[in-house]
Structure formats: C-alpha cells, structure tokens
Amino acid sequence: MKKVFRHKIYFTCLHVLLFVLLLSTLYAYSPTIRVRVKEILDPADKVYTIAHRGASGYAPENTIPAFELAAGMKADFIEIDIHLTKDGVPVVIHDDTVNRTTNGKGYVKNMTVEQIERLDAGSWFNEAYPMFARDKYAGTAIPTLDQVFETFGKDIKYILEIKDSTPNPNIETLINDAIRKYNLEDVVAVHSFSAASLRKFHKINPDIPLYQLVWYDYKAMRVSETYLKDIKSYATGISPNFQGISSAYVAQVKNFGLKVMPYTVNYQVNMDKAYSWGVDGVYTNFPDRFLEVIETNRDNAEW
Image (cartoon, rainbow, N blue to C red; front, top):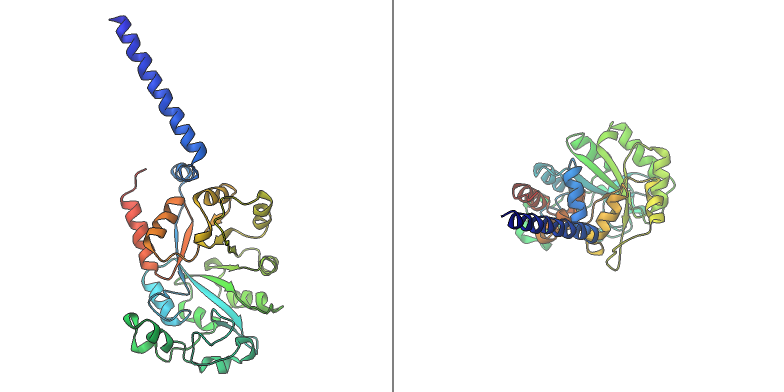
C-alpha cells in the first residue's frame, strides 16, 4: 500500500510539474497571455471608448450632432481634428480641404472662419448614408474649437488631433490657449502624427497627455526600445492603426510603460480582439458597439 501511495504522489507531482512547465512556456511565448496575467495582477482602471470624429458612423463627422450622439452613448472621449483658418481660428474638420464633407471647395487654410461657418457640413452624410440620414443634419456647420468647448465643457473628455498639413508655428499655442480658456486641462489629451508638433506642445504644457499617432504598412510585431524610449520622453502612449499591430506589439509597448490605443476599429470581431490584447482604448466610429464589447467581455470574464 505504501508503494502504491508513493507512486500516486510521484505521478501527481509529475503532472503538477508538467502543468507548471506548460503554463511557463505559454507565458514566455504568448504575448496575449502575458498581457492577461498583467491585467489580473495589475488591472487597468479603464478601457477607453474613443468616438472617432464623434459618433461618425451615425452622424456627420466632426460636427456638434456627432459629438452629442457620442456623449449620449457614454463614450469616454470624443476625438476632434483641428485645422487653422486663414485668420488663425482653430476649426474642427479632418481634411485639409472642405471638398469631401461640405458643399464648398478649397483649402481650410485659405478660408476665413466666416467663410467656413457658412458651409453645409451635413447634407453629404445624408446622401452617403441614407439609413442614418436625419433632416436636422442638413445645414450643419463646421464648428470652431471654441464652440465645441462651449457646448460640452467638462461633460465629456476630448482628444484633439493637430491636423494642420502646413505646419503653423502658432497652432500648438492656440490649441493650448483654448484648453486653458475653458479650464479643460483635466479632460483633454492631444495626439498627432507629427512628433515635432507633440514635442512642441509638451514644452508649452507638459501636463497635457500626448499620444503619438503612427501608421504601419505591415503588421508590426515589435519596435525598438530606442524608439519607445524616445516617445516616452514626451508622450503618454501610442495610437497605431489597428491593422498594423499584433498582440506582441501591444504587450511590448505596454510592458515599456506606454499606453496603446489603436484606431479605427469598427467591426466588433476586431474590437473583441483588441480588447483581448489588453489595449487601453479604441478609436471607433461606433462607440456603442465597443461599449457593448467591453460589457460582454466583462460579463463573461474568464479570469
């Protein structure tokens, strides 16, 4: 009997050891598991839902109706694109021209704010997306940054993108002035593809969180630590295109102490994948969809 008992202990210990070795191997070679373990031991306070140009899947992008819809859906942030007019006023529009999203034509930088505000920035949406068309969208104006801040105040958080295709030496200062004017330092972040612009903004106001926007033509598995160290010197995190990253990328960047918030994720299968990778937030045209994914994952949490 003692011999049988010893054999049972031996086989039990052997199986436990093999199980531990298996888990160790999976942890070592699976970035997704490493991120999951990190989230168990040190869970993120929040996975942010960022309404890309507002709830732009349902309303004209970068307009007050799109921002109102995003706020009503309980998005954590609205993402806003900013250009400067000819007379130096920050206005909210994605492209450097008004051609795509208004009934006008021309470069934003060549138009005054008065000319910009006369344009219809909503009718195009009704024509392009009749399933979401609303009569009230017709005639919707391009808002100034001041108008957005006046409308929403601290009721929602903002991520402002410096989009000026012709670098203006004052754009960072003007944006920071608007933030301070409305006392919104605690609810604003800034991102840009221009590292130079972000560095300049960091010098102007080091208290505002910054995110480096990046685009990868091919799926990035890893990036150099030198690159991450450089970004960390001025930014809080990286906002990459979702199709250009992997679970290994997310794990590396997060383990380096930077946040990862990919764009633009509109399909729930990809939202679920991004959530499982441990991202800190997702930019989406459909904030209600990502909020549903977050709720479903938390309800069905396996850890």
